[in-house]
Image (cartoon, rainbow over the protein chains, first blue to last red):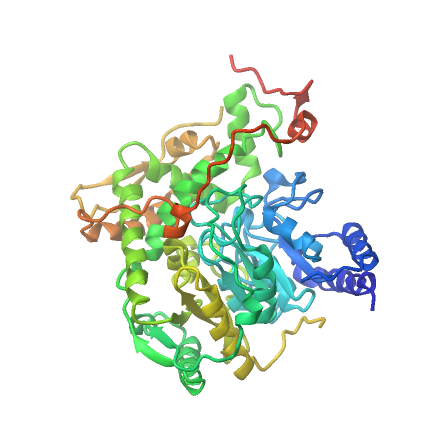
Length: 465
Length: 116
């Protein structure tokens, strides 16, 4: 089968499910078929030749839109490739579309997108999670085997869990952020969704590694991650934080996580009790640091150099204020206001400086924990996917769905979510494995062994595979 | 300009350091952030932000006097990565690319409303 035929089939599938799921903001038929034809015509072997992939709409692909799910960038087109995208293209991958997302990646349900919410392929009355909900739904519905997302506090892992697929947040500095629209620079990562863990490993091997265009990307050797998926996890020490498997977890999630620990034992892994005493402060630290950095990063959207500009403003200042009033949605405004407040004169030490110190304590917890274990196991999210609209009026309740994921972003360690069961209502549950710095191979190996031995039984109601 | 009359929302008492009350003037914060907000938005965001600030106040129960703050997100290996390059001219965006998507471009410049 030619690559053109295969990509044509993927594009048809993307269009077919999009009416129901709204997972793609653009389906790039012309560009994808041109890329496919070029790969058909070239004889060389490439690691991802003809591999269809979706890209979150806050990651730049030359010539394609990059709306970030926001009205303020509704007509913006990127004129360069993000480094991760460039590496995918060079490796033979074909970009089939840009995926829907919470506006500027701020949200845990995909409901803050200016272009409509994404629906969960398992139950279209429920959210897919966020902020990378479009990428998650595109992979879960079988349109593509993999997609890029972005993570600031769980925005790949939580939607992966809600949609019953695998999702990785790498170590900070593992994947270049060049071409990823900045939200909170000290927390942002490009992450990867896969139908299965080997899809993530194949993509990670291509996109990881030092990039001179991102000074925070680190010079650390990149292994062939697919080679690392040996299936052998005998003797691996799995850190269990008893405090985090208790109250606050849905019953079904708790039962599923307890079962997962038993399952890992059957594979030869050894549970060890560990403590992360400061993990409970993660959400508070996150919402100070992330909003503070966002208030600064999003200052660039002012109606001057690109994007939307409000009409009929009397002067420059009023133009800025009206442009941002009309261009940003409620959640983005709420976070810019919070970030502005915590950085404002007189409050900096009480909030931002304090949060940086507690962030250091959270990181220390992980460093200590990894002296006695190889990976740390938690639930990815305390609940399964909730109903659309259910948490819209209560931002704090929405934020708390990230309670198990944010601390990996604060510490900078990698983490993967892999399905570990279905709830009594038939919604997927995710198991999170957090790794030591640069330990992607270790957590992917455990996750892969798990999904191979204990695959998720069941399929989404919207599925084109 | 939109109505910028102050709207104060009472914030919860501080746990540490002890202060009696904090007020957040939502419209003032919005002005600092260059966002015009309506009275309705201020009435919506005010209590929501107060609730979030109340939640983040829990950090002040922790004694962090002896803790070095974590600045940025770099790992040890990231800190050690050499990021300086030779100071050489390199290709970049053309003026057309740089200004081509501006709302009001004029002859290679960005035009904005009058400042004065």
